[in-house]
Image 1 (spheres, rainbow, N blue to C red):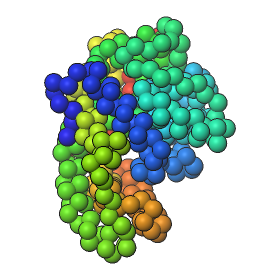
Image 2 (image 1 turned 60 degrees about the vertical axis):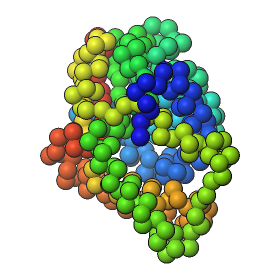
Image 3 (image 1 turned 120 degrees about the vertical axis):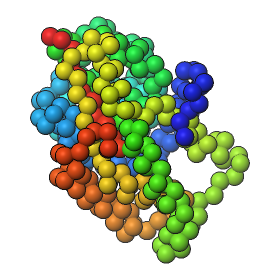
Image 4 (image 1 turned 45 degrees about the vertical axis):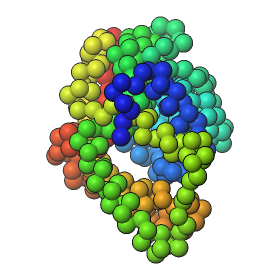
Length: 306
């Protein structure tokens, strides 16, 4: 369930900040985020698809919007695809988690707490503005894209991946419901403990806020129309994940009902490996032949005129 259509930008910012601060400590484990070879391969493949099949090369000065814990940018940086990284987010908690991971990976960076619609950077400061699963959290996208255009150097690019499509959002509701229904049997079979929350906990952690953090689910045509309004050219929108989305949401829905530490490692390994296997089916069989509208995630790229 997205945020209410009448929600103010201030309310959306507050909910997103509180939710992501609360979720920061367990975010990587919840979503199976990897910073090794698997994560690097995933992220490089996303960028390649976003640019129509070719990696654009190294970006010397990169700005990430809504960096979260660093899945997107750090996996690019460790492959040498980013020179100087500036990571931004409205959540100090997420950036603190990102900084710890960056230190462990040996990736130097600058972090800044800021909103996408009012970036505190000079004109023409970056070669790329990028993000993963962030645009659907931003209330005023026209304002944000104008800022992206302003801080980019001529010839610079934007690339945003992991944005939910309207069809994919509706499709995901099915495995979510199925996962919730079979969760008691799944916990019994694995010997996992049921996760419960008191009323006080629900108001203190991220669970009560999660339904309000998403603002948009995109039709590809609507997403494709955003960059030209701010002056960008060569806009492209592609899709990814269909069967992987259905499988992944079913797994996550079951896992969300259990105490994390009580879920056996063998299950986590199976869930992760099977998700990767279904991703490969999408890439090899479905993505080359089906329209972007049918996939769960959308990928956007565009360029500022040279």
